[in-house]
Image (cartoon, rainbow, N blue to C red; front, side):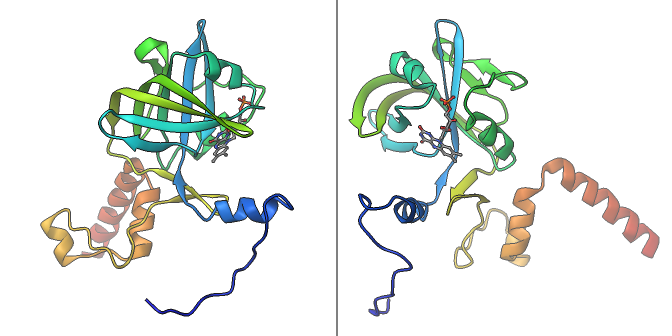
Amino acid sequence: MGGKLSVPVEEGDPSVGLEGFRRSLGEFGTGVTVITTNVDGENFGITSNSFSSVSLEPPLVLWSIRRASQSFPAFEACSHFAVNVLASDQMGLSQHFAKSGHKKFEGVSWTPGNSNVPVLADVAASFECRRTKVYDGGDHVILLGCVEHYCRYDRQPLLFAKGRYAVAADHPETRVLSTADDLHSPLGLDEQLLLQTISKQDLAVVQRALSRVIADLS
Ligand SMILES: Cc1cc2nc3c(=O)[nH]c(=O)nc-3n(C[C@H](O)[C@H](O)[C@H](O)COP(=O)(O)O)c2cc1C
């Protein structure tokens, strides 16, 4: 790689101003999760992108919650929580659980998991965890969980980077060959993005429309 240093767009001391610090943290792209719990029969959920894997053996994960959030007392008291990794078509669900002060589970599909933690439907993956440790993290608290059950589905993940939602696309320099056909028809970046954002149902509609066009032409 070239040794030329680039000029920063912005820099500074976070104790002087938070805006540039926030934007700089936003350069670190993440997935998006909704973390859920059930305390005394009541469900709680919060959108979080601070989720991270920690250890395979034992299977540990962590995330952090802002002390000022309304769900904080519930997550501080809970014995278990579930990490619901959102799929690319669940941006609305992310926005829904990022808003305070409303009935978050009304109209949302979920099933009870270990210790009744709500596991959301149609996610890309879920991790049901026993809360093991809690650490001080300034204006946040870091929760460590031991994964007792996981599920993975054949869905694309929802991403968050630069303060915006995004979808995953293979890097142009990455070659992912899942089938022999891919060798003969590698997709461009635009085509991959399109395929990842439209659902299987949409694809079926496109397929039917194309069949009709081809039939008309022949
Ligand atoms: C993409 C995204 C990621 C977020 N990540 C976190 C997080 O990791 N921890 C946190 O405390 N809040 C996070 N938030 C903010 C909470 O979702 C938001 O404060 C929520 O309204 C809290 O709900 P409550 O006040 O009902 O608990 C995130 C919001 C968004 C949109």
